Amino acid sequence: MKREDFRIFTIFRNYGVQDLSLKQIENIIDNFCQLRVFQVAIGGGEPFLRKDILKILEYLHKKGMMITISTNGSLLNNEILKEAKNYGKVDSIEYLFTYRI
Image 1 (tube, helix red, strand yellow):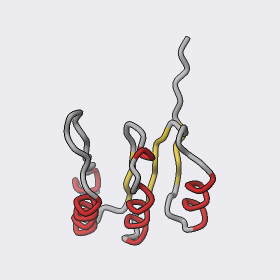
Image 2 (cartoon, helix red, strand yellow):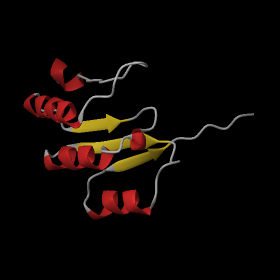
Image 3 (cartoon, helix red, strand yellow):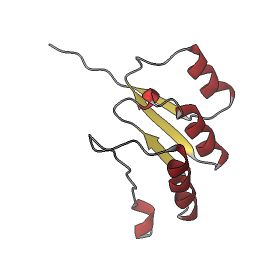
Image 4 (tube, one colour):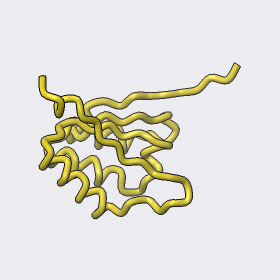
C-alpha cells in the first residue's frame, strides 16, 4: 500500500466562523476528485441543519463519491430519507444518540 492510501481530509467549522457557501463546498469536492478521494463522511453538529444539505449530497453523488452521514436523527423526515434512498445519494446514515444516566 502507498502512503496516500491512508490520507484523511477533514473540513471543520470553528464556532463563530460563518459556514462555507455551497460554491465553496463544491470547489472542495472538485479538489477531492482531483486527489482521487472516493468516500466522504459528513458529520457535525447536525448536518441536516444546513438548508442545502441535499444539494451537497447530490453534488457528491454526481461526482461518484461514496457518502456516509452521521446524525442524531432529530431532523430526519420522510422527504430526506426518500431523497437519499430513491436517488442513491447516500450510501449509509449512521444514527447516533446520547443517553444520559
